Length: 146
Picture 1 (cartoon, rainbow, N blue to C red):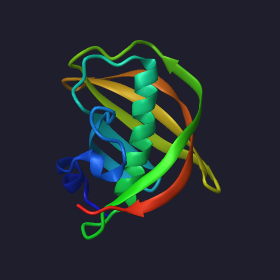
Picture 2: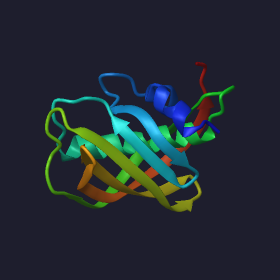
Picture 3: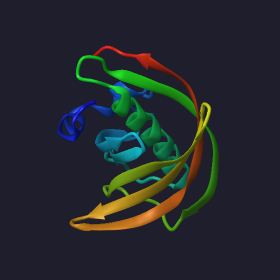
Picture 4: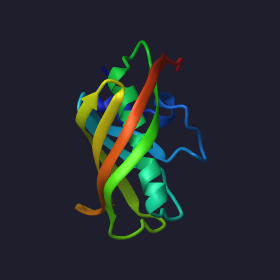
């Protein structure tokens, strides 16, 4: 497993097939078997659909980070198959730091249900702007090379 310090120095793109400009994730802040937290790349504003996509990417990146070791970086592959009980109080405005927390709530075969929370960070204050549940199907895990 990679340390949180190591993860924060790595480009999140190594853990997923997404690439800029479609990649929203800058780096993983924390990860564990049950979830983690990521920081998004600087942006020009993100609406609810973009925040949901960024949350799905957060799941993939956290999962890839969890299964990786310093010797073998791995990418997780899957697909967002559903979103429910999602509530967005506002969009993220340009320049705001946005973090996403994901927590695995249930696993059934290759299907996983994650609770998500999108947070805007201003100094020491965190304000939640989106919550919900995402269902993802994990297609496979593939090894990448860094």
